[in-house]
Image (cartoon, rainbow, N blue to C red; front, side, top):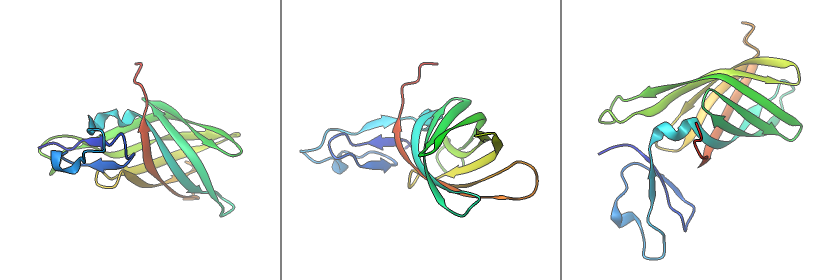
Length: 151
């Protein structure tokens, strides 16, 4: 048994865990299994709380050690990204337990920490200005899809 992403083509539903034939119906395409390590090349829909208290929608694209997050008012950059895999309790099949890195947007910069769940395909996390003040806020999101790994 191993932990993997599974994506059902016809229904668009995302499932986590072991894919069983009983989960697919005759009208749905067979699920496609994708190793969890592919999270390094994926797109996530997210929301973070800005310093002014407003919720900001952002589409995150991870591309290895770098990435972007697109908002309605500009594109931020993600860099020095590290992925920490957790094998505890998953029969040694890794899942991303933590994603950390740095962000920059319009001259501001800081750090972020995301904690993805293999059960929900969502992450909880936070961001800050990286200056030790603790100023920042929550940043949460949900897996949308994988992108081609050209590296």
